[in-house]
Length: 287
Image (cartoon, one colour):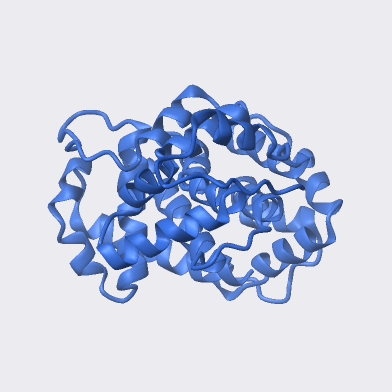
C-alpha cells in the first residue's frame, strides 16, 4: 500500500485532496468482506467464514486462541476452526475476523503521538459495546458491531495519509484542551467523522452506516422514549467505551450518567452489559 503525505496548510485540507487519498486506499480484504456478510445476513453459511480464516495462518492462530480462552470455558480443547465456530458461534468468530483483517489493511502508519494500540482497543471496545447495546435497543447486532469497528476509521485514515498534520492536531488537542474534532477542523478543515463517512462510502457500506459514522460526535440530545437510530447507538457505545477505558473497575460511576435513561432499561441490566463488554474486551485484546 502506498502512503500519500499531504503538505496541507493550517488553513485546511482541500476536500479534493483528502477525497483523492481515500480513493487510493486499498480494497478491503476478502476475509473482512466474508465477515461483513456473516454479520449482516442471517443465512450466510459458516463455510465462507471458515475458509477465509483457514487461508490465513495468523487468523487461524488468533481464532483458536480465542476459542481456547478461559472466558469461553474450553481451554485447550479446540484445535479446528470448524469446532471454534461451533463453540463460539459464527458471529463471534466473524467479529474477530473483521477486527484482525481490518488491522492488517489499515495498520501501517507512522504518526507522532498516535498510539495504534490505544486506537484499536477503543475501536474494539466500542464495537463490543455497540453489539450489546443493540440487543437492548432491538437493532441489528452485526451491523452495530461493524459500525463500532468503523466509527473512528477517519482518524486512522488522516494519520496514514497526513501524519504531519494529524500529529499537529493531536498536539493542539492536548495543549489547548480542544476536542479532537475541533483540532482536526483547525488543521484540516474537516474532522474524522466526515472522513470516516467518506471512507465507508468508498467501501460501499450502507447509507445508514455512513450516516451514523458522520454523526457519532453530534451534540444534540438523544430523544428518550423514541426508537434509537444507529447514530444514537454508536454515540452511546463510544461513550461507554471511553468510560470503561477511563475506569474499567468503576462501572457504577459510568452508568450514573443520565444519558443511559434513553435506553429505558434497568441499571442492573446495564451493569451486566458493561461488565460483559469489559470481560470480552480483555479476552479479544489478547487473542
